Image (tube, rainbow, N blue to C red; front, top):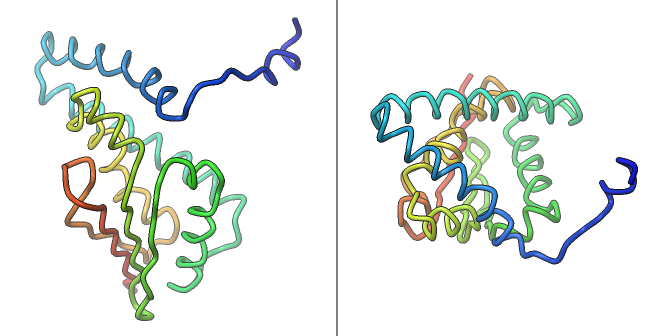
Length: 167
């Protein structure tokens, strides 16, 4: 079978089960590394690695997007991201009205948080996924800053993203 043929094959598996399968092996390895090298050292390494990956992938994505030059441009960009089919199937988000200086994004349900909770690895999910949001904010535009006080990964009722435009 040629690569072009097998790359089009699909299997019947839910997004949840797929993500669980992908991350379960990684989590097992991380837990073993914590035991051998120490939790702090492993978590610091993982945090740096995933932050670099997130910044890199966000930079590549921004090369394909219209430049963001205002907070409203950024709001439009976030709405576009959340309307993508994959995002629609893995997260439930709300976008309360912006006040012209900030953009609010509320994640009410997140499949990644559910997967990591089921795998008893919310601490790893926070490092691999949630903390990277802060580093990527400035990739969208240097004036974009993120604050957040709650995450689903930490057991809160939502993730409360507040993006501000700071000149």
